[in-house]
Length: 341
Image 1 (cartoon, rainbow, N blue to C red):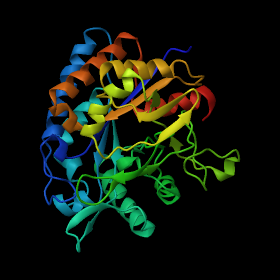
Image 2 (spheres, rainbow, N blue to C red; image 1 turned 45 degrees about the horizontal axis):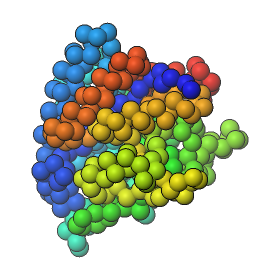
Image 3 (tube, helix red, strand yellow; image 1 turned 30 degrees about the vertical axis):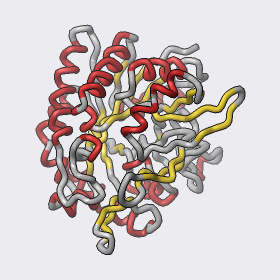
């Protein structure tokens, strides 16, 4: 058993969702950011509280910059400019700031936004334009990113690599989702079946896996988020039904594994505390070269008192285990020093 030494905590700075009282993002022509405003304040207070116990809390903020933001807010870098004071203050306290593009595309015939996954030329062009806007506004020397909905394909990963993105944190190993929605178009489409649980350089012909041949791998480092499995008949599974019901777009595949039918899950930073601890405990039983936990949340989740308390309890518990909270550039440097990933 290897103790978890590092934590990568990520926040996807998306607008508020219908689950938390905002308009349906797929139908809305305006975006609400109450969760983002509250999250910066909450994290500042949490950081101060953990510092009293000798823990330096660091978070990685992933700022939206994409076609939808440009269409609804005037330009792709609107979110970066709107929260400039907040993210610069966060950087001063050791946080990281990365790029978070979604592939939302407007469908004029249906009068709604949808997740574009098939028009690869449009996606690559949008990513190039949006990254330019992001990098000019943030000016980071070590750009890193997380794709919206954890979506990637060979084209998007190669585009990231060509743009000079140093690290991507979209991977959710063992997970695949064909999309879902209560109303409107399907969203949350991704495929990471077969991906390892540790950082790797994606293969040129399969973004989900490393390639043994160095000249067939990308320079970009893929840093997986933590996933875990629970038996369908366990308490953890039944306790997880409520948060899954609140996030109906996440329909995870069942996997038959002896001796029990199990379900794969993404570890969210706002997960029930018992679930969070169990997932980290499972990680410690794995033979990982660099033991770390990687999880994420969305700002609007902190508007919910239960999820906010979950997040606070999870971070305080991690702090008590003496893990080191890292920003992404520091983690990439650590990986390179450890084993030359």
